[in-house]
Length: 368
Image (cartoon, rainbow, N blue to C red; front, side, top):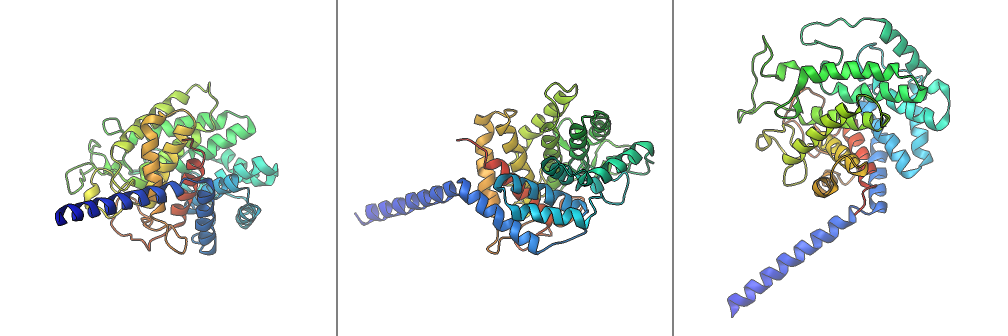
């Protein structure tokens, strides 16, 4: 009898715990909760600025800030973006061909579309004129203009947004050329993931093979997350009948299928995608961009809802576990070029917050 009572009590506790967890998770998907959490994370980040405002780190952050503005309509958020733009004189970063220095221009263009103030995009237009008139010099591992995979978040969306805004397809054609060069150089057609740069390719002549501890190829979570984020931001802009649109859709869908297949039990992804057991908990900047990109695909009918919605829901629960009591997004890998183990709950970066804001802005649109 005592054994039966003990068993029943254990079952009741287990059932109660599961119910409490389910109830808690349902809260995470309420519109009011998502907006509140986004505002909290954004408020903390604005009070803790980092890096030059034109830097790529802030390019990713302010992409999320604009998404938060669209989501909430907050005048305070708009004011923060205007202050950023004015501080930068609405200019890209100083390096002419470097995609990192173009990332911030995505936000300038989005803001121009709201305000109609030409000063927000004119410096980028002038930079692009110079860009197209100046040949890029390749050297060493820099085999093409966008020679590292993260560049596919930084540059493509800025180019395509500008082309669509000005109704000038020369920017779209330039993006096609530079994107395809990067794809041909770094995309692994067996794994459906991008090498960060040619140092991480196994079949590159003259490059010593580098492996993970389990013998797998090295595929960096943040790098691939940013590729997927870049793909959806390009697809969001391209006309439905654009000649190369199917190329971007295929690349995106292949990556989406792979990414979902290696999602971890906590809903997140590890710094190294194919050697998750060797790395600490879920990494926020890569996981945030996967959550954003997958949710966007569902919302826009490019990914099958039945297959991908459970993964996105699981990911969003995981992303919320990374929010610390003061509002900052923890577990963000510091600036680098490959998987590392150098981050904890106290580790934050502006791009981690940007990824969270982008994710929230799309999860909010999901329909049950």
